[in-house]
Figure (cartoon, rainbow, N blue to C red):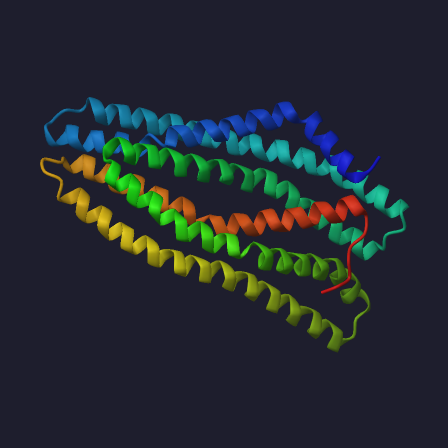
Length: 288
């Protein structure tokens, strides 16, 4: 059985558990979308000494807290179960193919990253998409001018992130190559070779961090301009209530905040894509 078939088989075998954990994640994110609206209504209610909206907000908060705690406890059991099922089989198959022990050690670590991606990053994608679309819809319901400003902000943000995909892929390929060599270098390398290896590791990590930080900094310039417009437009709307101002500002803040996750998610997707290629091929490339 090829390794990609093994992974696909494990996903199919656990589709019920994965479906439940992702459904809980999706439900939590959808409920969280109502929080800014609920807070705004609670503020408006309290300003006129009406407490029903506050009660609804507290009820929503308690349901969200319960779902979040339950999902985290369930997630750990599901994904650790998948990891402990797949790692021994992959190692056994690749050891039978003659792969060096040092690379097998690295592969076990890389598979853990794939499982972490399933546990952490896929729900983050759900969160980003729901926050992105949901906040835009809520802004549209409040005022189309704000929704239009938020949409226009997307153009430079998406273009910038798209231009970084290939550099990110190259960096993650080098990071995974380096990790696969690490056990051998530690076991056999001289002091000079060890220093070179870890200096290169440092260089790759700094380069990755710089890409994320630089992208985030440029994106913030566009965000600041649009935020000033949204704040000014909202607060100058005749007859608007304080709670409504809070809801609009929060939805816009959540919308732009969802874009901040793009560079990190691109890094994770690129890294996992390269890991799966290595597992599928059964060998790692040695090029830096």
